[in-house]
Image 1 (cartoon, rainbow, N blue to C red):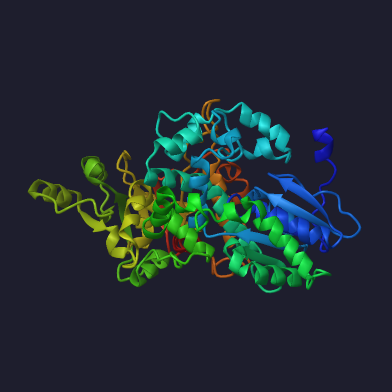
Image 2 (image 1 turned 180 degrees about the vertical axis):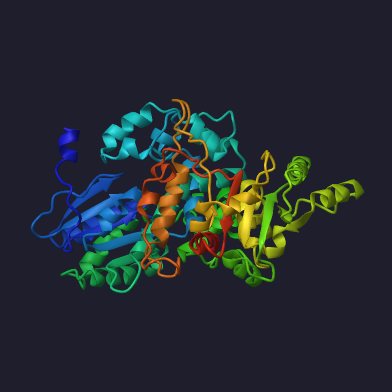
Length: 534
């Protein structure tokens, strides 16, 4: 029965269709009630599509598609047919605080209180979800334990379910965990915002905040007029919509539980959650809120680099240029970093070297100074290249692996030889700059190991590829993303076939050793700078 139902249609939404898209905690119940009122009163049938279901067969007078739990892979399916799209959106910070309170009190126990995976907690590899059959996907989820995903989100080791996780973790930790869990949903919402924005758009971004009691009437009338509803001036239609959305206290009252409804919204926990979102949040959540354009608290993403460092990021300008060796380090890695540079000098390499850090290395003692002198290495603090408006709380996210790509962009070297602290070199690597591949492309990269999906008790490697797909969707409609590329930008065949894109591996390029000419490989440098500033 389910198989037959899924095969009834693969056609896209037609131009005379209406598509209602809502994400978890942006107003799924509100979208359903509004769709029922406006669609049925105009003679349109409502077809509900959840989690990778394709559009249903088109009917004569147009159809209303209600799409819930949209996946980024399906954005083109719903936006490519020219239908009018009503997209319910919300400030990501409000989505997180609302979701935290909602899930912590035990709502939706079928997945929050289950030790097995679900589509709200885990992600499937594309191969398992390619058919769009949510019933087949559920069988995959039922065979996957939730524990590895809970660890991935940062839950306490004792937590067996997501409900256990939120109730065991403290407020700040629980909100950070909910931020990570909701990031996929938020990124999908932002990607849909991006691809449906622009001249001639047939998409109405409907902010949940605009449906509060005081503004509901004006919003509903405006929406009905935009849809060219035949009864858009009917006061009874408006009254019916208000009864459905506010009657019984289970739709909009619940949707605004973190903003001013009785009991739950007035609890100390809800007030503390709102204060966290307004005053602290995580760097990732602040960025998502600013990117959404819906936040009153975090309206802007601070630039990543200072004005001076921006020039160096693309071309190695800023008074330096030339070739050099670059590595990142931290106090616990400094001995290994200096040992690596000592081995490098033993090969006869005479290139200048820089050791980058993010506010972690203090002034070296006399012994450390002698070792730096012997290694002919200068110590550089990434903070000097960052924009002064960047919040100090974001520095922690730039340490570790992230230091390497940021240092490549921030250095005044134009031609960079990036090395890890654990790299062993037996010959002078300077000769790599003469390699034909480097001369052709301005880059010399080495493949990393291919890390395939783990065993049955390990989560599939989806988050990196989902982030990559979301980033591509975000920039595909942006004419200024890569000035050196053809416009509008779109992913290349090479990118679409890469294991990282397909979710086959979270590793692709080995960062232990690579060469990059920022002036010659300008597109790669510009992509890194643009992604960091996005």
